[in-house]
Image (cartoon, rainbow, N blue to C red; front, side, top):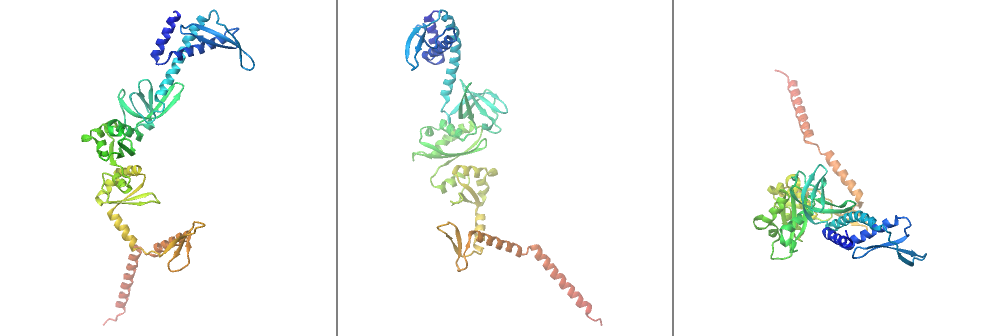
Length: 409
């Protein structure tokens, strides 16, 4: 092959592999430089030049102690053409592989959070391989939905969680359980979300079972829930089908925490929401017949609502609230106030009757002693019954003795 033909072949190879001719020429030059330095009588400092016609020259250099070039000369060996051909083949093969690996990595680097569609190639107890075209993605067992068994050669959408650069090329780790998969699937089906008109503010998911999402509209004329549901549920149905039947609850997001918590427990109807800021608890009151619906199967609805809102949710029926308030009102409560020492920050209980104040620890100890005395001092129903039986027996014995002592006529 003549030098022009070699250059044309190199250009065709570069176009086929999606890289520039300069990258391949640089790889060949570096390989030829290494081959030259392994030859006897080779100069210590030299570099290879390849011109546009693929003519190869080895330029040797003489460099002084300060690093300056003293002279240069052409030191191309006579049989360097054969060596160049062998070296070029090896170097090009290796370099093309490296460039392809780098190009594959660059294609997916920084795409964490995107959704990809792949074909299932291999499945075992540890992982599932998805063919994405030029690369394969790894779906670990920990990122798979329980009881989901996709068939081989079927298409599957997954969420990219990590892209690793390895010696064998990029390793792409995907997930089917990540909440981000829900967000990206809705972005594909709902144009308002992809355009930024509707936002998904929060998402709580139990993969394979149920998902709750909170949506918000930046346009008052667009209903965020209706946009996600679609005409006759067409949009949300596509997402549910991709998730193999996982149920999805869509609730409107609200800056009013009372309203947001109440809507998060949908489909249950909430009467009242009370917040305990210090404990981070939202106490929710529902009608008696809505209690089981608000809690959900095995507490699922309450758990998802808590994750969605960020509050610990305590659900109570109206009857429970009435009973607690009645018991609270009937209790005996000490009158006084807690006073905080500005220097130490310790709290002290100061009774209203002017008696001696006590620290928080002493107050807690006294409260425990009183509770213990109430428990030990109050007779239970069995003891009271035994006492009544003993009284009746004693009365019967006295009556019998009186009858025996009466004289007979």
